[in-house]
Length: 86
Image 1 (cartoon, rainbow, N blue to C red):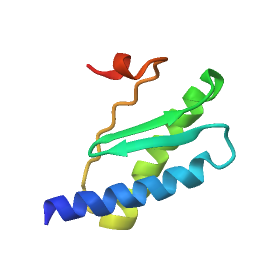
Image 2: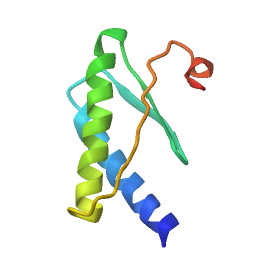
Image 3: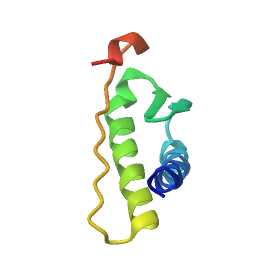
């Protein structure tokens, strides 16, 4: 059940993120397991970071209502994907 719920949340989050990015030059380029990669101009990085959080929050509300479920995110703004790894 947990894995299915996580998949539902991820699908909702990606749909919300596509909507959030619609007015930007940013492009959703990759999603796998627990990683979302968005390519954007550097000047949009802060807006994209906010869009990711807003999409995650909306997905949580749609999927779980007011249940106290946390969705911790750690966005990284980098020029190379390899630099995003901790």
